[in-house]
Length: 280
Ligand SMILES: [Zn+2]
Image (tube, rainbow, N blue to C red; front, side):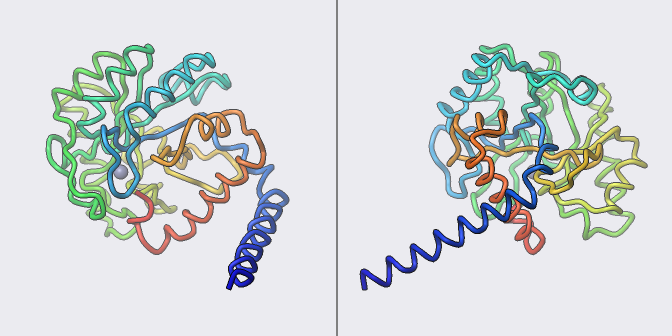
């Protein structure tokens, strides 16, 4: 019995080491496209089932770390046009109310600005797609406006948070273009960037995003080796992550851990083709 367990562990360990070396020789050099972009979903007081949230103290630790290390938040345009290793973008996917409540005051304290990604059809309402974790309320227009006036940016995250690859032309057009129009009209701003729901996209979806007049679009993980303005990868931080994760991502070392995160991203990405739920 003990021997069996030992052999299973040994096998898993050998497979992991094999996977790591495979990653190193096949992907390491390519993984340089991953830039200084981090994203959060929810910031909460207590752990929630599903693990897509970060606790308040975790978030505060991240911000303190970024400040101490001299990182600065910039606009998306500035980020794309200037290759400064200390520039960073901080995304808030789905623009939940808890971001306004818990993350915003911490951001203010460290003089950071972020990128809010509201699902336009759900502004001020509860989400219904997050089946695993219950329902969470999204920010109201007034909250979004207040944060914009304070220097935050807005990108469209579609109208109803669907897997856009599966929609017909008419619905796809609506999700991409109508969401932009509504945000621009109500908030009186220009919305130049898009975030794909679940990070899922393909050639056709990208064409629609370009045609709607967006300057670029963001996804979750990409295994592209070259920079694509309509598929900019981001690194999402979950409840299991820590400052060590952030440090590894930003400085690309220690290599062992970067390999671990990158492998994790690739594996999740691969499974993501079967179910959008995994990509939350
Ligand atoms: Zn989302």
